[in-house]
Length: 379
Ligand SMILES: NC(=O)c1ccc[n+]([C@@H]2O[C@H](COP(=O)([O-])OP(=O)(O)OC[C@H]3O[C@@H](n4cnc5c(N)ncnc54)[C@H](O)[C@@H]3O)[C@@H](O)[C@H]2O)c1
Ligand SMILES: [Zn+2]
Ligand SMILES: [Zn+2]
Image (cartoon, rainbow, N blue to C red; front, side, top):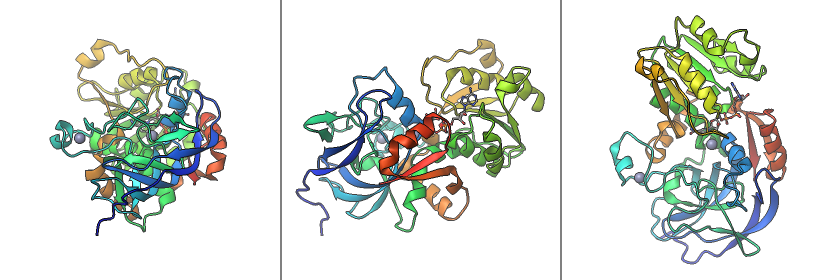
């Protein structure tokens, strides 16, 4: 029996709409179109807030992409499926993903990249398939974010940008695997491929940096130095595996010198989990000659150019970026969800707040003021 609902109707539901950069979100009644070919409409169950949502919401450079619905770290239930969808059925539990996997393009078949050419990071606030939106408010189109837009009770995503999960998986926690936690663990395991006994330095101990720390610990790193300007991150950092904490604001020497002193000339691996290209330079200066690897994950607010002395590269260091920790969502994410269910890593303690969807502006304030890790919004 086909599960395709032949004519799903427009749904009216609540969504937190951003009308301008950094302006408080407004709970609006929006129209959500039915899913088109190869798309699914999802009833969002929980969405957490990632730093990237806040950075992009505050970003004045793309001020023409408003009104907009942000949110990309989410779990939900398939409400209806578009033509041609065979992978999902109504009622399936899913994680949304901000980079999809089509399994056909050069990158998907390469086995060495998650930069799908068809369903990769969407920057224009539109759906991949037809460059249009599926949301409107009082007849006005509303832009998407990362082709996910989970700050809405219902959303439409491409079927290649969702991953099925077992109904036993707790939706209010696993949403963190939709972005931040996976990005951090994958940076440690897939991108850096940290080896036992190595030394690691992590700049920024938010959910992403703490997940890198946990990944490094599980790989048997001997020293994991956490660097954060917020002194309150020391305790959380220790809980997630850091062995040393540095607040760069209270160092008498430049932080890269302190790190060199602690690691006999530089760490084997350094990670940028702040979103500041100045910190990328410091991270590169903090790893060692010969094989030092800097993995940069942060999404910068300003100034996208990285400045680095050429000598750092001549001496054998590598600078590498990564999105979603190198995981291919369809091929790899189910394995990561299984590891979570088998308690092979910690995730629940990265949720600092559970809040109703109606409190979204309060949750955004907590994120802006650096007073939370992940706030999970219950729809
Ligand atoms: N590449 C990816 O796939 C991916 C995925 C998720 C998030 N991100 C990005 O990763 C970054 C971290 O995300 P998050 O959700 O953990 O953010 P977060 O805001 O929770 O954490 C950032 C941490 O950096 C610290 N910090 C700020 N300035 C610093 C400085 N100069 N030196 C040291 N520490 C400093 C803050 O105190 C905070 O603890 C953001 O830029 C986010 O956009 C990237
Ligand atoms: Zn994110
Ligand atoms: Zn692809």
